[in-house]
Image (cartoon, rainbow, N blue to C red; front, side):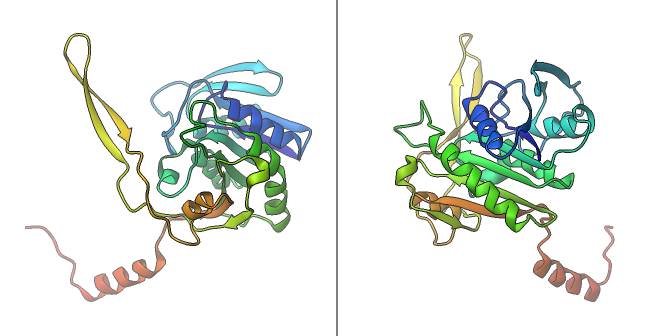
Length: 260
């Protein structure tokens, strides 16, 4: 089995090496194509106006000046002589649950693999206040191979990407696995922080509020709160079929309106 590993934290991220070790527990044919620089929060973006600069770091290991999506396309369409059998994206520094999924380059790398018809899994390691400065990937490495094996044995349907998050706990403290829905936080976590540079010109950072929030049973949020590994299947097709049916009925019954 050939495995492609990518991430959004960059080619030098410790989590990338952890993901490689997870892949090596599954196969001896592991390739790495990861961003040259940190691409956290780029979501499923493509580099259409900038050239892609490729650098071979070591055998089967490449750095690309581009996004995680760029990396997957470059690997599948240019670097590899045959498509991989599996794509692992991560291990991300921090959880990718609830609304994080929309922004995550880690999840996007796996989504691009799914679009290309390759079974793909996103892996993320949560951290907390005590582990923020030096997250440990020990739990991801301990349980990652088994989780991926189980998912592959069952088979990943076409158009589905698997999003896996490991709790901020030591391996012995993990409470189990929860197959969970994507959650929704009960408050806005982002704010704009205004600052001034050395010339007194204004500039801004997008900042995050660190607040305690309630979680709903059966969600990825609750799973991590309870110290469990969350496994969430996500659809690439984002169509809401019930509302699509309602809208179709509305537009079929209403005359076509033209401005003016």
